[in-house]
Image 1 (spheres, rainbow, N blue to C red):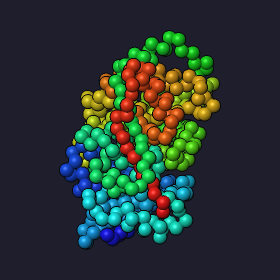
Image 2 (image 1 turned 90 degrees about the vertical axis):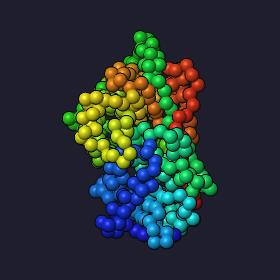
Image 3 (image 1 turned 30 degrees about the horizontal axis):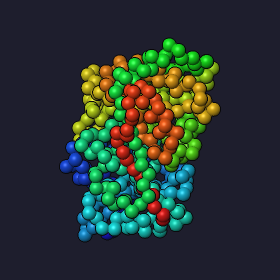
Image 4 (image 1 turned 180 degrees about the horizontal axis):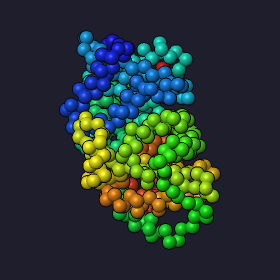
Length: 362
């Protein structure tokens, strides 16, 4: 097995084309995350100012059989990330081959993480179940055999939860009459001033998630780059801010499952946006992130944001919600999510989709 650095335009074309070869027989795969891959692999991106990003091709018997990117982010200094990994099945010694190469390039690092794509906001994880249906937008879909390559490594599982929307809405309506918010208000983002709203989102992310597995503080321009490709699909109600006396204390990011607009390796474009705005065939939304500043953890800010969001979500016509991903080791988030959903549905909630990232010593 040989590792070839991606250094030419021809190499980069092979790097992107390889993904299509892996998924050509897997109709449930969606390519809607390709813009993020290109942003991180090629840039230009603010992420590159603090991270080394090195794409490679894997060759076996003069045939391209895989691709990956080695990322070392100075904000997450202890890890070498193996990102945007794709490979054919049955390859020999693939983990050891990549590990040995990483050790040469990053001798000061002590651990590797497989499946973290630069940052949690860019995507993470290999799929462990639900291979028979398309992924929800923003969550990964990978072949079932990938995890066989990593079965000897340390596995960190993540999950999503799926729930019926009407039960969720009915529950929150039932408690809204007795809710007291003590100065907390909730507003939609202002798309006309997206950079300013991104600044608030970034501030809250960095303040709410210290200590979260694999979290690295974000830069405003990084998040702005992330939102920009999807700004024609996002509506102002997709990002809500909770405020106390005009100061931001929390946020709720949600959006429809845009993957239902595309098939196979289609990229989201203008015609998909028109279909969404004019017809909207989507029946599921993604409950992506909800968080408040630590000092407001016991406040009703989360409830206030959900009560603001429920009629906005309901008017889209969706029937289901899916929340995640959540690391199983993040006990507080797991407990909060289960509590919210079990109170709303009256049923014991089990994870719907499962994912994993993997670690090993370098």
